[in-house]
Length: 328
Image 1 (cartoon, one colour):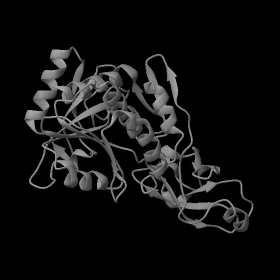
Image 2 (cartoon, one colour; image 1 turned 180 degrees about the horizontal axis):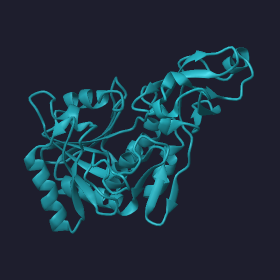
Image 3 (cartoon, one colour; image 1 turned 90 degrees about the vertical axis):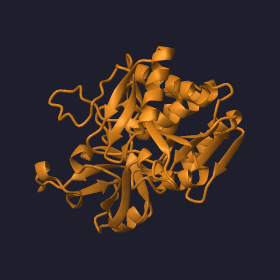
């Protein structure tokens, strides 16, 4: 499958933190023809093993997303929700949402709320129910929902609700399909519950015991008007080699190797330093006696909003760098 086709397929699949099963099943279907072994662990990580002669290398891309969980159903039929991951109510205001069973709604602030200081408990979901009884026929407390938006491509730019981190899952699938014989014993891990504390990567790294770990994820940019400089990357400038974020200081040998490979293969790269936020690298590098860990990052605008935006050429560069690292 092509990159955008994979992304569109995953974007249609329900998968907030704690309910990644549908995404996992689709990823397994797509990965199995190219794998020597496919394992699902107890926490729900999908581990795709491609055997090779060298050191154990683990690539991780999380398959969960941010979302909402229903906490209360009011007598008028409106829903109150809690967060699954880092959602800003202001950024989510008036966004359509969908539940796993197909029920759709919209996330709405109360009219009296101060939008500049908007809190989650000042917002609700409107699913079109006229009463509590009618709402309970559609959803239950504990049901989860996600942003309901399409994948849009214009020129070299792609916009979608969940590039974080479905686009990295697509990168690993494309790399797996393109790969011949890896020079390492390769584990591609599609992790769970990254958005709520890097939980899946922690158990996967403990099990896989990698010599080297690479987290593949989106990263913030510094190329929009009024940028607060929380990131260092720019769209269209290539794959980003992570140096550090708030969860990890990457191993200098891994950073150097990624940059050497990029230069040798003619892959455009830039450096990724993220002031706030982390990736699965934060859990991987502390596993057991420690793991040499780095990151391949996809520059992304408007992270954790319904309109995350990335550049297709950057994404293809990330695929190429992933393949180069595994094969060399």
